[in-house]
Length: 544
Image 1 (tube, one colour):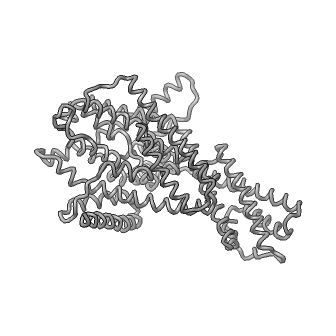
Image 2 (cartoon, helix red, strand yellow):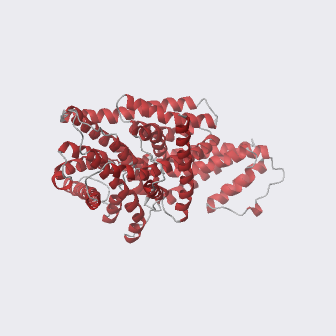
Image 3 (cartoon, helix red, strand yellow):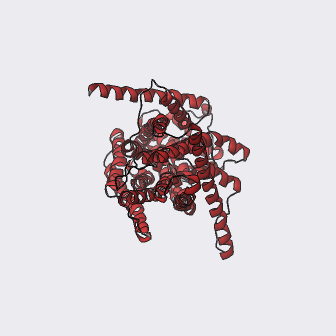
């Protein structure tokens, strides 16, 4: 027992070392680290001296998944999510269903030896894109922000459809009972709606609890614990744990200014960045390490036949995504034109092509494939299980490695340019909150509550900031005679609160996105942290 523990501990530490080394190499070569780690994992798995590390589905679903989903939901922008809601649901529900039905229909040519139940299981496993892969890779590929928003939200929402189809497929395999359409719709509503309600309830309770706590380590532990509690509770009640975690984290992210102090927010961001980096790194190495296990499940099939089947299947799934995205987009556009309904302008074909290319599968699909039973309800061997696992692995490798590595090239070829909307929004927001700060300072000057020299000095600084919105040289910004540090710090804390109120108003009125609000809020938190630690002078010069 002790020797086994030491062996597992050694493997875990070695995986951590690999994550650190090759993530650094990926940064140097400007490659998203999940892609490089997947490749390294595959190469290590083929080495006879490297121990076999089998991916346990429960390890993925109940250890890695909850915190990674929580972190992804925290970063989602509610405004962009709501603006793209129609497209997200057409991808999350429509595309998953379309993929499943297409595989069932084409099984005679594409999936030889598959009956419709096996094709249903395969479609359910690979139909939904992966939340972990989308969040870890999409932001690092240089994609336009609007495409990243759709890819991330799609991968987080489509769990409900994929999980529903997976459960139905298992029920058919193990009980030979085919659910009716009414059962399917009811189950989907319960899965999605129940998960969202559970997530919101837990989010409200945790937010209320953390209002009474002002200790960074404790609040961070509570947030990590919350991700597991909400996921396990939702799964125990047979609802969507993924949607529950996303709903909880999105609510807490929107409301964090009510229960987190600036110092806690800064600690929170650092700890969660490290946690997600480590978990993501291990997950993608584990994907690569499954290659020898996947190959060992297949026997009696030639190598070239396996390669051909994997390539054909991956290309087919990509083509199905392409067909759905273009067909649904332009079909909806024509329908709106005929019915004279208002709507957003139709996206450009090159943007739709990038959106197609960005659909990635990851560890969740592989874990679902590994969780398939070896025997059916009648005791017969589930013959297609090994091929389902193999084709799932092929699609994951193709989408992560080939599509991931070629995405920057595709963006350059298609001349896809990122939008500067966020930069414009950020400058506008900074200008508005500085104007609010100046108005507050002028009121304080009239009230004569603070030393006049202190107020005038800060007004001068904020006016220069308003004029330039850039870092000013501090050679002429020395302390005024009679300058009171205590009064300056007290007044700055007042101003920062005024700026936060103005910033949140802009966010709640949808004038700026959650991402822009988080960027500016972090600057305000850093300045307040410096004030409390007595090092505000240099921070003021940097901020103003």
